[in-house]
Structure formats: C-alpha cells, structure tokens
Image (cartoon, rainbow, N blue to C red; front, side, top):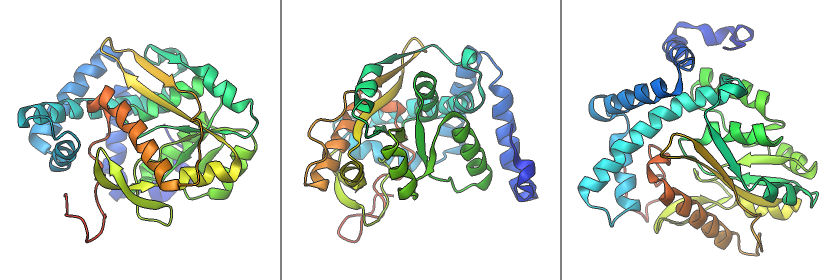
Length: 302
C-alpha cells in the first residue's frame, strides 16, 4: 500500500490509528461497488447522527448557500452529503489503488476541448473544484489523457505521504501548490495540469468575493497564471450519477480569459463552480470552512 518504509517516522505510534483506518479502506476497496455503496451509507449515517464530525459546519454552509431551502430540506441535504462524503473515501481508494479494469463505469464528455486547448501549445489548467468525487475524477481524467496535478499536503503526514506517492504515480508532473515555478514550467511545456482553486485562504492572491452571494476568500491567482503562461483554462467536473456511473464533463476553454480584472475573473470562476454544485449539491465538499478568516468586517460563521 505504501513506501512508508523509506520514512520510518511515519510508523511512530501516534500514526498507528491513521494507518489502521487506511488499512481498513484499502481492504474495503477490494469489495464490489454495490457493497462499498452500502458500507458508505452506513458510515454516512454513523458520522452524521452519532459522531457528528463537522455537522455544524456543513449545516452553516448549506444555510448560507441555499437560503431558499427550508430547515427540513437543509437537514436532508446535509444527510445526503455525509453519504456522498463516505462514498468519496472509497472513491479516493479506487483513485489511488484500483486497477483500470476495476474502476466504476464512467464516461468522458468533451475530451476534444482539452485536445483543442493543448493544440495552442501553451498548456492548460484543468480547473475543477473540491467535490467528494475529486480524486476519482482526477483518476478518470488521467486514464483519458496524460495530465499533471497541483496538490497541497494534508495536515496528517501519513495521508500527505500517500497522496504525494499516488498522485505522482498517475500524474506527471505532480506540482506542489506553492511551487509556482514548477507550475509555470509544466504549462510552458504544454502540460495539462489539474487545479482546484475553490478553497481560498488569505494570501496576496486572494480577495473577498461572492460565492453563492456570500463574501468568501477567493483565489485570484488563476488569471495571473494564465496571463503569465498564455495557458488555456479548461473547466472539468466529475459527477456521480443516479445509476451509480460517473460522468466526467470537460468544457471548452474559457473565452476572453484572463481579463485585466483579476477579481472579476475570480467571480466568473466562482459562478461557474456554483452552477456545477447546484447540479449535485450533496457532492460538494461542505465540511470545509469555506467562509472562515474573512476579517473583522464580516460576522463569524463557525
């Protein structure tokens, strides 16, 4: 499952619970998909009703983003989200460890848009967002077309180690989120690089801009990267369908992007992501504190 023998500190006792959890997921990944979905529903119920991991965060996010929904509708959407989140754990395992033949049924729509974007010779940012299908969507894309990916290390060093290894296995180049030179080098080499800028954090490349009409830290770096490299920005989104298959939709490269207004460009990207969230709202990553750290001018959400 891992090359952790090269990193002996990862085997220290404080990491054993994480290894145990990951080993369970690795074993569960061997189950057929109907059994995985049943196990995910049970795990989602357990986490939502008993463990309540970040339930307050999920409910606050949904209430802000869907003010038109009634409290029972918000509760039902939150409950569905935890099922999606739990299934997403098994999808991560499939994205990392499954053989191609063992991936769930999926179809790729719009691959010609990526081909056309790369024909320009300046690379492509494959822009997506943090859905619970993120990892398996990236795997589907890598099965269809050679691509690299940006990654940010999770806080847990065991998960960070595994993520780096598995993304390097399926993606080339694998570029750390803070490695601007590596990103620019890849794009100038006409690579397609997977990029999910929707989890904003305070930086020189961020502004407070509307997301679902609510002020949120928003990444303005996409415009700067596109301007610096001349790359195309090609949106793509993976969605879990009602028949348990998956659809990976690749859209045409954004026209008239970037403009001279990085904030307006970021609002445009936020609106694009919002549209695709509304197509399957339970599949977005609502456990993230999307409206945190906005500063004293805004009320605390969490």
